Length: 453
Ligand code: G3I
Image (cartoon, rainbow, N blue to C red; front, side):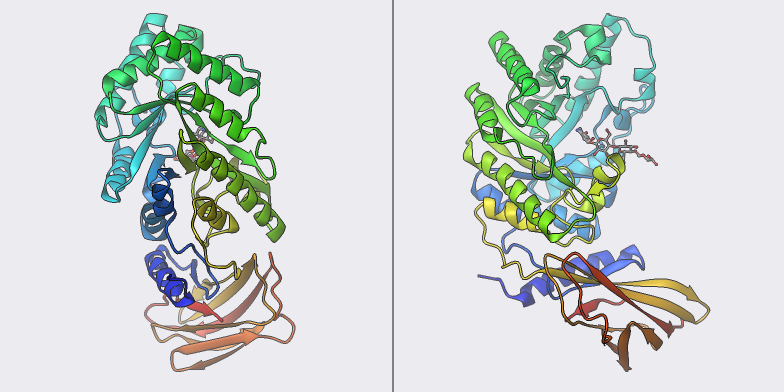
C-alpha cells in the first residue's frame, strides 16, 4: 500500500507546481498534508457510483484542474449551462465555458451532468423581462431544450431538466413557466429533452427534499404521476445543501422511496456549511455528516452517486450567499483535504492515511520595492497542532533575507531555515502563527516552495 509521507509529498509537490503560476500569494508546502491513497473516483467506480463535483470552467487548470480530473468521475457545470449563460442575448449563444467543461470531462474519462434547462433563476433578462403568451412560452421552452440538449447529444449522461419546481410546503413555485403553462411545463420539458437526446437520463432536481417532508412528498407525488402518464423521467436529484449537524435522519428512507417508485436518485449538489471560523470540532462533525450522506447513497442500489457543489472552499457559493458561513466543501481554500474528504473516501470503502493532522505553511510577498521586499509565512493548523515548528525553503533567484521577526531565520546560500521564537512555537488546532522578514532581490522575486517540518 502506498501510504508513505514521501509519496504524499511528491504528489503535493506536483500539485503545487501547477499552482505556482498563480502569483505571489500561493500556498507552498507542508509535511503534514494527508490524502486518500486511492482517488475518490476510483473508490466510487468500484462501488458502481458516481463521485462528482460542480466546476467553474475558467478554473480548470493548475491544482484545481488536477484535483477535478483526478478525484471525480462526474462533473456538473456550476453555472455554464444555465440559460442566462448560454443565451444572454436572444439568438446569440455562448457555449464557450460549457464546451470547455465537456471537453475537459471527455479528456479525463468523466461523465457530465447537464445543469439546468428549466429554472426560475439565472435566466437571461430578455426572457424574464419579456411578456409572453402561453404559446410563445411553450415555443421558447421547446426551442431552448432542443438547442441545448441537441448540442451535446450523446455526450452528456444526465440532465437536470427541471430545477426547483416546488415551494417548501409542497405547492408549485410560481415561476415564469408555471404561471404561463401550468404544471404541464414539467412534462413538456421532459418530453422535449427525451426527443433531443434519447440516451441522457432526465432528472427533476430540488433542494430541501433530502428527508421525508412536505416538499419531498410533493416531488414524490409528481414523479409517481409522471410515470403513470408515461412521461420520460429517469431520476430525481436531491441537491443537499445542508447545515452542519443537520443531515435529515430520513435521508436513506427518502432515497429508498423514490427508488421504489422506479427512478434513480442522485445527490446532486452536496455541501455542508458551518459558521466560520471552522475548528476541529466542526470539521469532525462535518466529516460525520458527509459520511452519513455517502452511506445513505451507498446503501441504496438506485442511488447513482453524489456530486459536491464545488470541491474546494475557494469555489463555493456559500460565503457570498450566507455571510459568516462557509467551509462547506471537502477541501479547504488551499486545496488541503479536510476530514470530510477522508469521510467520503471511507464511506466509499477506501482506507485513508491516518489523520496525522494538517498544518500548512503559506509564503507570500506582502510588499516589494526597488530591490527590497517584505515577506511573510503563515502557519495554520486544522485537525492538528504544533508545539514547535521550522519552515525551510530555497530561493530560486538570489533573494537574501536581511532581517526577520517572530522567528529565528538563518540563510546559507539559497537555503533558508526559520524556527519559532521562544513565544510562538505553539500553533493550536484551528489557530495560526505568522512571521515576517525583509529581504533583497533583483531581477525577479518568485515565491519559493516552503516545507513545514
Ligand atoms: O459571472 C458574474 C460576474 O461577471 C460578476 O462580476 C459577478 C458579480 O456578482 O457575478 C457573476 O455571476 C455570479 C455567478 O454565480 C457566477 O459566479 C452570480 O452573481 C451569482 O449569483 C451566481 O451564483 C450561482 C447561483 O447558483 C445562482 O443562484 C452560484 O455560482 C451557483 O453555485 C448556484 O448554484 C445553484 C444551483 O444552480 C441550483 N441549486 C442551488 C445552487 C446554489 O444557489
